[in-house]
Image (cartoon, rainbow, N blue to C red; front, side):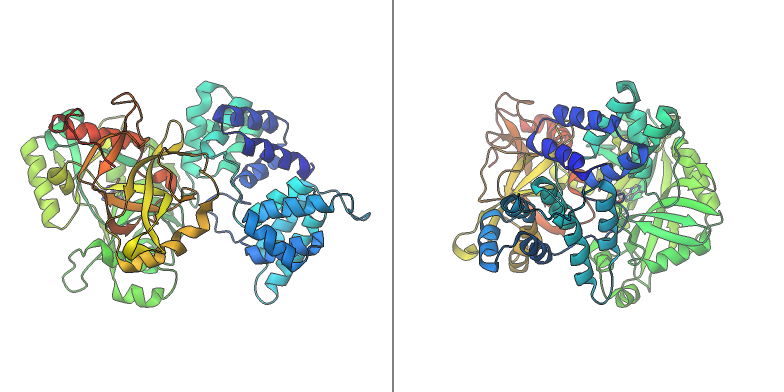
Length: 593
Ligand code: AMP
């Protein structure tokens, strides 16, 4: 297959912002592919050679890529600088310069096939050690030399990690069900993705074995599973009511969520963003290996820093020392942690995700011996509001954030990748301000004035709308930043600058700088109110009004454990708005800014 055909599809995807159109372009294309090529193309459409959780290092620096473009297109350093200033995207630059060279293609150029591209990308990825930069440059130049302008655009974007054609994983799943199944098969196809986190594998399985094979897919060790999430309600009686009068309640620990994959003694730990965190918690990995009685298991738990003398839990800041990339030996020694396990998704060869919560919890206690580093979350079966309040009080006494109520109903299976009322959280914050904290995505920035001149002064923050799959703004955030954070902001954000408003951002407010939605910050606010300018839940509570946060403040916590799609959703903002309830009559409430 020619790479030109793939690049042509990427090009068509890039110019449309209609999800329906993207789905139809993709599904038509998918139908023409062999299952193996389909798998590769699905990864490539996300700018990757492997699934998301696979640690990959294609990452070529812009400078290196531009050097290759300059040499192939015969452009001088000065001319290069000029286009670089104007375009700022190596993909566009390559396209412009290679277009100029058109007609001067070497007689010796070979056709650029998908196989050749994949082979060279793999070589680039695996180039390590001395001279690795030169070798990367050589492999890249070999394919760039034979590319046309559009192919060059995508090759440069893939190797520099800028491949964003706008078709996210949900659009790919839509296209796969359109190509190989029916609308009714969509939930099964999505489940297959949620329990494997591998779009390419799902695509290949579907194309080669049909929907029946998809339904047979099970959780497997070393394929991380998308995490199940909790809804929220404003009081314990409401939670009990929703749970049918009885539920399990657990302490809600304030730490780092970890999914452990244990396979005959080897252990891998994944964050909720699917990053490999084994090297951050080697002590926990080793302890889980020792304490696990099954040959294989996948469990989830919260890693919390503990005081080595008393065994008591320490505040969240302590465990963040374990998220660093370097100096882990010292951090392991200085910040001891304990994992509080709360779920089991695989036991031996049994896929536990299909069992109700009660059975999973019993299995979890059966499969592990406990120790001072490996424990279970505190849990009680609760049948009255008094019992619930008392349990909540004990959770706060132990410095936990609150409680998680878990359904005991027969249908309380592990819903990978979904937020629902099978789990309901209730936090101390709800008692005080009626709202939870928000994890919001930075989509823009405003230049600072006065003391903040020359820096970013405020940020435009958004929540994710799962339906439209757009980021809708909820506040302009300028409070809670200390000097160090303000100084650091350009480093954190500037890699994601976008020339125009990214098409997945829905905003009326115009910031000075736009960003591709990437960085997630934790924000608290006094209240959610109707807003004439913000686009979250626009027109839902009131015509022409969205929802916005009043007096938003950054808590100091960058949620680098969350990807943009895992941030607070518009639906959650709406629910929290409704939780504020009658105290906050929309007509009387002041509009947020
Ligand atoms: P939130 O991030 O506020 O939506 O709360 C959900 C998070 O609470 C989960 O992703 C876990 O990291 C954490 N958590 C703490 N304790 C528990 C527990 N007992 N069961 C499930 N999740 C828990």
